[in-house]
Length: 376
Ligand SMILES: [Zn+2]
Image 1 (cartoon, rainbow, N blue to C red):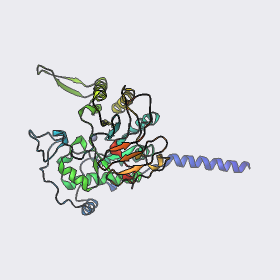
Image 2 (spheres, rainbow, N blue to C red):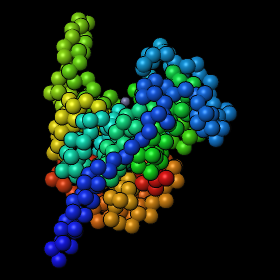
Image 3 (cartoon, protein in one colour):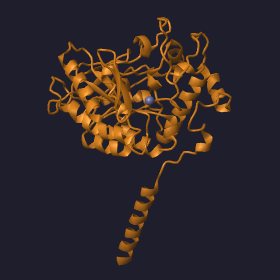
Image 4 (cartoon, rainbow, N blue to C red):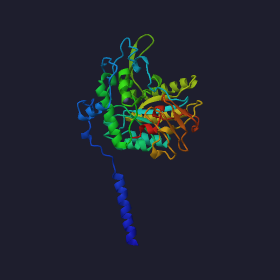
């Protein structure tokens, strides 16, 4: 008996060690260089290009810069979101008033795990817009994001401004990232955010052909400016005099507070997405202050977690989400999630929510819609 117990103990310990060592390995040699737009002549890219028909793509000249500067007079037909606010079918707001889509761009990075710890402790779901080159370096983190109920989306392979790339380069940027996330997690991405918010009708055409829905964010007021903390910024006063200073975390928090106040006072019919990042420690530390600020903000907000984005592993309920890539599906959420009906136009309708201590809603981006839409 003693022998049996010892054997069992050894076996259990061995299994524990093996479990701790299990890591997702991605062979980086099978992917493009971590930086830079992938080569469109690569056989894999050529195979992908054969799968889609880009005939009829708009032919606006490639823009220049990272990100490109806006033309003096933007062409309305080009519809560049960052230049004239033209968004077409891009998702720029959450479907329901008082809901807040928490999103993080540019990861995963070594600073993402402590952010995930924080989100878990505070039961805050988020959407992570992933860079493919970072995914193959940190596949375990991406898997953890999914396993902990977050929504995964694409932020391209190399974070290039898409209006500066050819149609074929855009395909390469998207498909390599899609492949990397699929290898790390088994799910296929269906939502994307263009780096710098840089998008026009040509880029939209290509993304649509690839089956992607585009997610921007809710205007400058909900760009949290976390990326700017610690950087030198130049301000121009009323007299036209300019001066520079280092942008502080306090300034960024005040900026968000002002945006929340304005939102709470507005005749709101939709919720908002804020733009955050998880590529620098300062950004993650900032998120730990910004999220409680939003949750505690006095408004009539009704917090809820969107059920539609819960992957099967994180959803104890009956997920009947028939997501089809058009953001159309119905999710029977679990006991902590409301029932969300995802409309064809990318908005969502919620039937119930979780009341919390009177803060703003925290909701996975409406963009995050259907879990079924992202599952392979
Ligand atoms: Zn970015």
